[in-house]
Image (cartoon, rainbow, N blue to C red; front, side, top):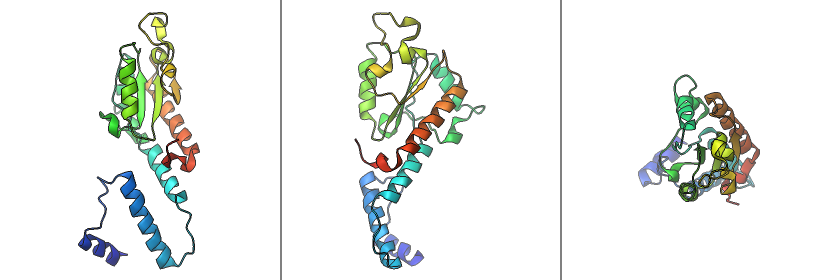
Length: 196
């Protein structure tokens, strides 16, 4: 195997793990599975089954929520990332660009002006993507539920996966919501590769 790796490096065919797109990875993994199949004289390998399980494992253990704080729930989100609660031990890293995020973590009240911005951010996120609503203001409008300019819940314009109630919810509740999202991703099995 070391000889094969050295040959790939010499020919310039070694993939770059940092800058590998999904298509490049799928091509590379197919080539590697064909090489393994030839070496082990295996007659048939089901394409996508093991790869889907690997992608599922990677997706649930490396969640990248968009670093977006709308109101007071953002303080609890920041507290969850602090050393006392340490959300990173669950594989959660807050990220600033929607193009590299897979979780849209909404917290705080959503005004009519903010709604199209959130829709745009959601559409910029690559598949697979999930939405978590954190706090009463995001779930139902909170104390401003009857105001003319506050949306009565993020589920009116985005598909929400996990709800975290509270005003504001504690960091432990956010950790529990992340664990519930990981369980939901685990139940998806290999469907994570193909957009619905």
